[in-house]
Length: 300
Image 1 (tube, rainbow, N blue to C red):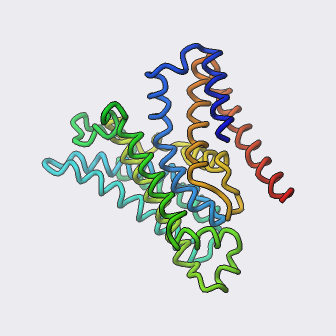
Image 2: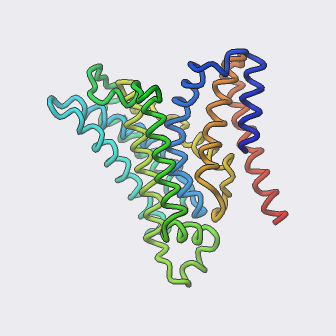
């Protein structure tokens, strides 16, 4: 999909004349950062043949806890580990439901999507919580040597994911389970532990996305934050070449997929396409990507 990303960038520059400016490219990277982070975690899950529909709700809950933690006098930075802990806890619950209770991933995470969203609204009294003096706001709005911190965090997440998936035995187990779970179990792989891990790390990355969102907005709202984020994350993973049935995929492909989603959103705005058509275009892109995946698998 890398050539597709390049062609999209060239096309939007020719149509708008404003796409390739430094300011706009910086905006695109920042827009892609949170989705890239979520998609990195989602890659682990989809590689095993599962799916996590709850990441958007986890972002909302983690952002809410992060902002509330930042309001504690003298302990504002506790909002970061608190947000991460919420994400990890939600991911662990999802993992146990799938790996131990044996619920289908779609059903388990669909239930979590609703329950965690309700939790986010409950702890925030269904209002927007603000903190204009958030001590870690630089993570969402600052930069290091001209590179936004959001971009640095997202790229670090991609690198860590690559190391786990391609340089550890655990990564080999994840691909093996996605290829054939029964064969992996017969080969001695602890499938229950690995499945629990992949959902836990998806939740952890979603928690990190919540912290990034809170740092960028100085606020959190249990109802609005993270809406439909799970769809963009899934789209990024599939566009990046990861098979929806598991066993095949690359974390670098996921990065390209997330950039395609961000470029599409930004470019369509620059050329004056309404947000209604943006949803239609994104949906068609997802359908085309899944159809292409099935076509390649059938030929294989």
